[in-house]
Length: 97
Image (tube, rainbow, N blue to C red):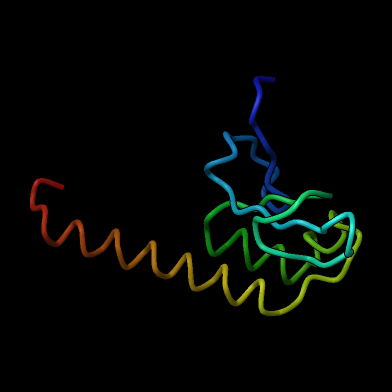
């Protein structure tokens, strides 16, 4: 496997890390954060289905070995919705798609 490839905790698909959201359990504080800090990491695809599966089945919590705060999932959902709205807006302005 090449460098910088990760696996989604929900669908188990392997892709380059920029296709994922990263959630980190910081090694010094034990705090679970979104994409900042050093420590144990879990990755989830930037899709609603993978994110809801990670939350519903506690896959992210098990991968991190820590409870994931609700606000992490709320933030990730907002990011996904923002990306979807941006994609819809770009297809409206670009009739070639």
